[in-house]
Length: 511
Image (cartoon, rainbow, N blue to C red):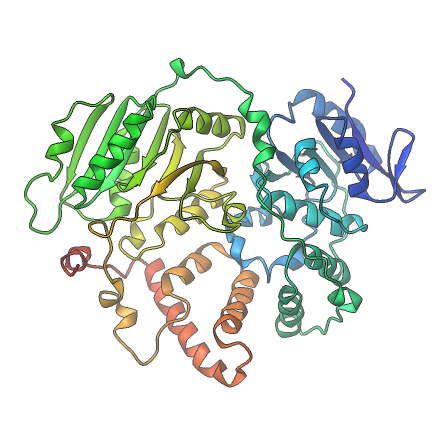
């Protein structure tokens, strides 16, 4: 098999393939992606033979992906700025497996031509290290699967990390200018280093990478035998019988291949029997399994639903959604989940606006997720009733190296019912709001996620970001901010110790 491997020539200091040379790394990728399904590259010549064998042993190109190899992360200085992606922190451990992160390794890489072709409209730095950093970031944002591997067959060749100039170059191509300011300030405050930005700070290279549906077209051509696959579904619900009826009717109208449908109903305070008689007395195309819980709590209800099924896949819906004419929705989701080797896939809702889809490439949307029914992680009971359980779940699944993908091609309409559900003002029942003198900033549940999953430098960067987000340049507010931060930090640690509980029943009664 003739594999296409772009290599770096240390004599000419140029990238080349066979007898053709390129002025930059991305120029070579772009040219070779026009006529090939997959392009690989190799910085160290002695790895090329092993890379060639690796390409022969594995199949690439069927999914939009970028995978890089090497034992050294060369993006160490992104710690302060990457607090929003703390669920990609597996890079800091000496793992032997592959895990998802846009923070690429520098020795070797493999990329689908479909990804490069979508990125061809953007400009990239000429410097290899800066360009590779932008490539990882941009591939992530357009919706590709971006991962790293510590495969031991390749050499332990070390490439020095990005210099400050190279990293600022990366920021200028991938983020808005304010992030250069954050970087310079974080180096000054935390590392006691004065970094001069150079002329790059005046360049307007920011491009705003957009989510690209077209990179998934190869998966649409794949085939799976749905007759050999068993799919169950479940809905957690509380006090919304009419919406549950509408939701199930919408799902049935699409003729989804669902075997069992689990309805996990929680009792409202004072409720003695089910409110779903109209649903349970009706004949459906799928078998209804009804569970009536005395215990309140969305996390608990979701866990009951996830543990009730022994099917190959289980899909979770909210109890107030409608699905338009999409009879192949589940089949398409399973295709994407299987061919990306993912554990779960979320799909879009009508209330997603702007380019949020690009940021959701690796997230779980609580109201619409298909799970592969194996090694499913439970929702965190420790924060039951606090809210933000979906975000915490995202962090946890990535921390456990489980791949999550998002698709904006399949979608549903989230009605956001004005009644029922878990909507009550939790601030009345949480201890950190009982003292009005100092309101915690950020919320302790948010900070709980950071102290649980983030690195120390990411936490530092996040603290600086929160200050400027809320106080701008009002430095005289720093003392007040520190008090608010410390209060939040105290309660975040109390949550971590499982010392904070909320009376959900009292909250529901207050609605």
